[in-house]
Length: 234
Image 1 (cartoon, rainbow, N blue to C red):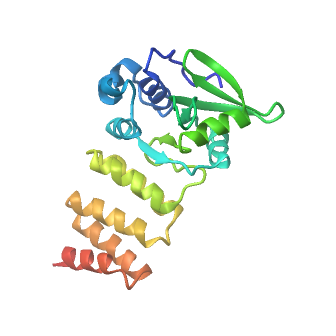
Image 2: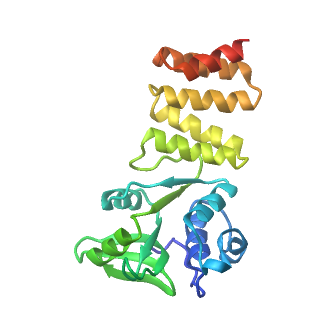
């Protein structure tokens, strides 16, 4: 509650302020003003989710889309990580979209605690908060240092987030994420396939062949893993 930084939001700048908040928690020294050119769309007077995810990856962090459940939000909080999320403070017919950072909850008083707008610790009844989140499509992301796995991670979703980091040019950071996935899910052929692809792109053919062979051993019928192994051996 106290360690999470706070950036009072200027008009229409909730996206850069919220993203700077969670990036700083993940170890990236960045200010909202630095993010404005990357995420703010003047024509829309705001930021879109795609821009926030792209900026997260450019700073070498994973943007992991959380399941749309309150339990998933609370699991990240209990792991010590605030959550960036989108709210609709209006109605479905006349939406007012707003990014905020969930920093805590009070079970006894049934309230959510947020960094929101110009409020450093906004207390909102959990039901009201949940309704505003639901009206915005229950969109929320955890911003993670490579190697950190969300509290309720699914292997395919985590590998997709790591692949996005790789596509942004952070191959080494993506490799760290793939290694973390293998430590968590050593019997998942998709994780070995992803690790093999990263090694192949880095020119590490022996490591790629080993990873692909492990993927084939776990999933003998996987045509992609067999094809990639054959390519490396060739």
